[in-house]
Length: 355
Ligand code: SF4
Image (tube, rainbow, N blue to C red; front, top):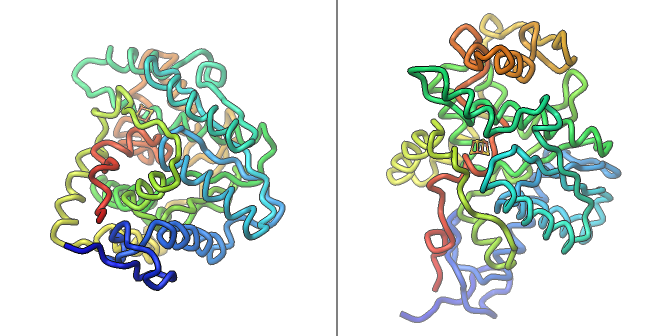
């Protein structure tokens, strides 16, 4: 079968290299990458996410999403003179045999792109607790799954905020993509978390309670297109799976989403857009959050999720912080890493519909 010509802006000058999963159009590599970058720029501009002069902490895990995010932001910043000051912030959770290799990828990216890099470690921030230690402690509670990603997600969100504050960032960006967002919407439905469901569809959080504003510039980009973009740009990223990822509840939700996608290909973006339009009826709205009595972070109880979790760990009962009595801390925190979100995700071979 002859290779079709590109139907993008080059108007058939080049042969098509792929069929865009998002639109079904056959396009060449160059037109695809330009369109992808233009769509991220549109997300930034439509949502007014990053004002000129912003110091932007880019959550960098070494995985493909944060790698693509940093690369696209850097490209757009220079091409469109956005006046953004980008700073990579990486979190070392203390996961033996996994995180060191991922951090090595982040260091290579920082050197290649000449971006400043700050690494913050759980062990330093959380009184010596590493994720491996947390997992060991959680395993000692009989008859329960360890739910490592639940703990890790909460601590990670705090660690990224801390790293961003240290570099005097004004904004935080993360590499969450459309598939992540659709999974999160489904997870919130499945656990009946109406409050999180109602606020989960926005492009980010405005930065209440002293926290920095956060946003997700890749929120409308599909996982497949991110893989394709990384491939065409020859980006160097880390793609191994975290040892704790197979335990994540998110994996079940992903399987469900895949089955739904087979019947309705637009389901991922449909879910993302549905979440944007959801609003809680006044009577169902939770009371406005206050400040954690220990650290001052935003909290719906006297202690924020991270302080409650650390309290539970130090008392030998980590589950106390995420048990049924503590509504609001879901099966997995919102900050879990690329590794848990990547389970079962397309690899390069599965993502490309190449000619
Ligand atoms: Fe943490 Fe991600 Fe590993 Fe879960 S998969 S424990 S969130 S690094």
